[in-house]
Image 1: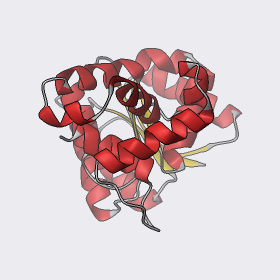
Image 2: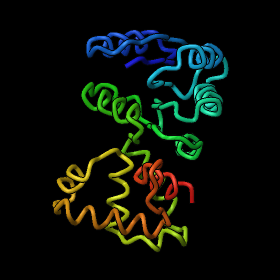
Image 3: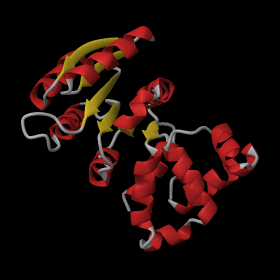
Image 4: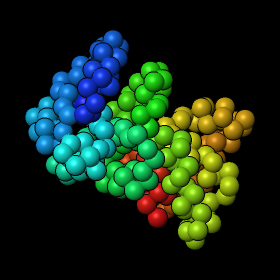
Length: 214
C-alpha cells in the first residue's frame, strides 16, 4: 500500500516507516505538521493515511483537521488516527465525517505490530478499526440515549466488535456463539438502525457511524 504518515515524534515516525517498509508497504510521504500533511494527501492520493491527532504548531487537533479537510475533497480517503490518549470527541468527528475507511488507535497499541498492521489493512479496505478503549468510552456516553434502548445488550456487544473491525467469525469466537447467531444479531442491528440493503454502501460501517453519531 501507498501510505502517507504524519507523526511529529522523530523516533516513532522513523520506527513506523521501518515497520511498514518491512511488510512491503511504501511510505510515500512522512511529515510532522498539519500543513505538510494536507499537501501530501492532496499530492499523493495514498491508499491510507496514518495520522497523529496532535501535530505542530499548537499540538491540539491539527492532524485531525488536516484529514477532515482532505476527506472533503476525497471522501473515500481511508484514515487511521493515532492518539496518546482516549479523545472521544476526535473519534466522533472522524467517524461522522462521511466516507468509508476510518480508524482510531491509541499509540500504545502500535507496539503490537500485528494488530497495528491489521488495523491499517482493514481501514485501507474501507472498514473500521477502532481501539477497544475508545469504543468503550463512546458507548458509555450512549447509555443515556433513548435510541440505544432499541438495541439489546447482546446487539450492543456485537456492534462494539463490528466497530473494532471484527469479522462475523471473529465476533462469534469472542462471544462464544455461532456465526449464524452473529449474522442474526447484525441483521437485527441493521433493521433497528434503519439501514436498508444497497449496492454501494457498507452497512457494517454505516451501522457503526449511525450508532456513534446518535
